[in-house]
Length: 112
Image (cartoon, rainbow, N blue to C red; front, side, top):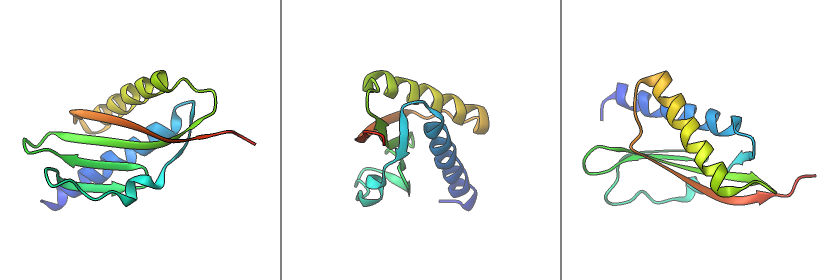
């Protein structure tokens, strides 16, 4: 993997984190992604807090986002909004289209 490719992947991860945290209903990124073992089929895996970015055999980018949601959030709607926002922000800032964005809700925060 080229160094500029790693920088691009890191930038995508940073944009995804920022975008996710801007969505109403997301309280935090989950640390669960850090414990994942990269898949045998995946290549070029980048793991950051709450984000796993990999490529499949064809080179398609796959983004997995691990979040904590606010109690009362409608999870399907939250996931849809996250997918759309992250895809839009990444495409606008990097001109890269993510082939797959998977949202994983790792917990629900009840509030204070």
